[in-house]
Length: 105
Image 1 (cartoon, rainbow, N blue to C red):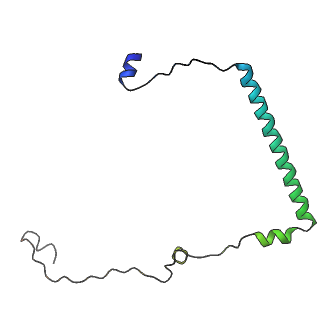
Image 2: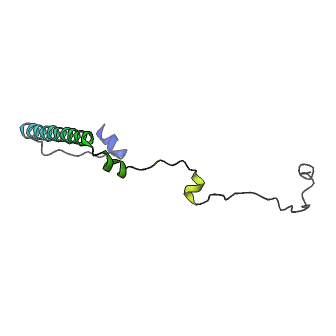
């Protein structure tokens, strides 16, 4: 089976070193502790922002917010008022093969 897979273009990598399970678990628990600390900090910041807005800091926040404006894609692209129209130039009577002459009358 392996030779067939090799012939099909698959490669095999030999694992020479396995990670120690204890160090893997230690690094996993350290990462979990960092994530929990970050969540606590984010919750603290959200609580502080809520208290600031209760006190009267909304004036500064409203100044920084954006404004919603209803517009068209043409106005955003700079093509406001431009129109695309096709004109038939009337090439006159073209000479066509007898088989197709009746089709274009």
